[in-house]
Amino acid sequence: MPKYYGYGCYKSFGVKFLITGLLGPSLEDLFEICNRRFSLKTCCMIMCQLINLMRKTHELNFIHRDIKPDNFLAGYGDDSNKIHLIDFGLAKKFRDNVSGHIPFSDKKHLTGTARFASLNSHRGMELSRRDDLEAIGNMVLYFALGSLPWQNI
Image 1 (cartoon, rainbow, N blue to C red):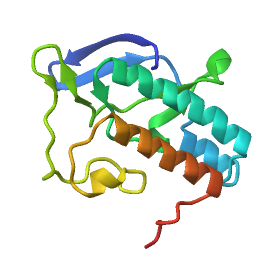
Image 2 (image 1 turned 90 degrees about the vertical axis):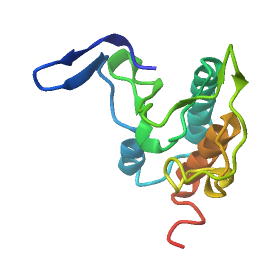
Image 3 (image 1 turned 180 degrees about the horizontal axis):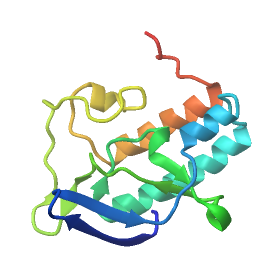
C-alpha cells in the first residue's frame, strides 16, 4: 500500500482529501510502454507481488472488488520495483468480529471492471476473496497474451 501521510476535509468546498506518497506509473501504463506484452518472467514477478498484496488486503478483512491494471502502481525512486494497490472505492468488508462472514447472495449486479472480473461476478454472485484472486489471474493472462480471449466479443 502507498505510504499514508494524512487526510482531511476542506469544509468551504466540501472536498475531502488523502495524502499519500508519490507513486509511479500504473501497470497498464508500463504494459503500453512494453508494446503490450510482458515476458513470462515479468508476469511471474508481478503475480507474486499481486498475490501478496491481496493476502495483506484480505487479512484486513477487505475484498478489493475492482482488480485491473490501472489500480496497481509501481513505486517511485528507490521503491520502483514494488507494486502498490490503490482505489478502494469498491472495496467491501467481508468479515467482522461480530457477525462473521458476509452472507451469500446471488442477485447482485456486476461489480468492478468486466474485462477482468471473475465468472461469479458476471453471474451476479456476492464477491469474495477468491474473486479478487481470479481477477488477478485474468490480469496476468492479459499481460502474458497481450489481450484476453474474451475481449471484443
